[in-house]
Length: 94
Image 1 (spheres, rainbow, N blue to C red):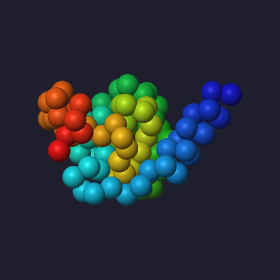
Image 2: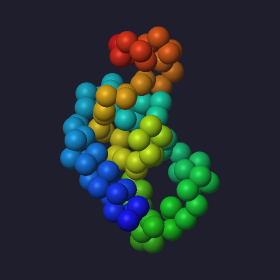
Image 3: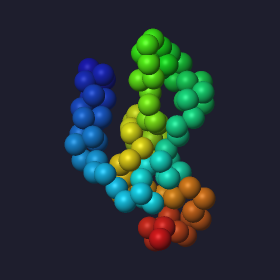
């Protein structure tokens, strides 16, 4: 049951996600973690799901805000630039 709910969240997030202007892409967000080793330490076994013949991880990462694995070229309303101050976060950053 939990797997279905999680799958629905992922599918909905991907449907809602839109390619973003380069400066507001997930890859530049403080919530996006594409450090494979760190994510694997926190989610043991995740890399077991990777392809034995290629890199199925690609440049995907973990969104720590939404707890989803995502590709880095989308954005959402929770975007927060890496290194932004709390005041910038409250006003949208730019």
